[in-house]
Image (cartoon, rainbow over all chains, first blue to last red):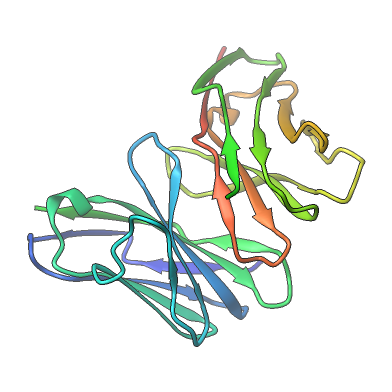
Length: 115
Length: 114
């Protein structure tokens, strides 16, 4: 079946550094990628939606200069948390929509801890 | 804007019993999809069941079935013959026809006791 590979699964970084999270669709083309963050025992909050080759659409309240999303190809989307702070510590998860179909596939998530 | 509401933060059920998780949503669109996802402690999202809004027939997947009431904008999940492995957080989600929006409810934590 279709797989979305998300890396890293866990990252610990110092405050002020930038962290890049990758989501790669291994055997299908992903025209749309959804990026979510999830706090413990809470829901998945949509941060932004990206379409291949165009700028991401951010949800209200999400700082686009802080959470940089790039979807340069049909198989790769990245989320970069710039100048991370402890309040950015969270679980980040991506979901890819297969081109031409309504099917969705989730990455396994990235636990970000900012010290 | 679309919203998805799950009014039960926690539910519990005994093994072999049946439990129903509630979900309501709000949308002005006529064509869309609804999903129930399971998130175990590993936090991997697992699709439990999906429903196309244009289909009147309720979806079923083995022990899982839904009660889809389009006019009432209600989409509940019934788990029959509950098993210990069903314990997880369950999310109801709305997905538009264009594939550009996927919105989750707040989730229901299901515990299963033996």
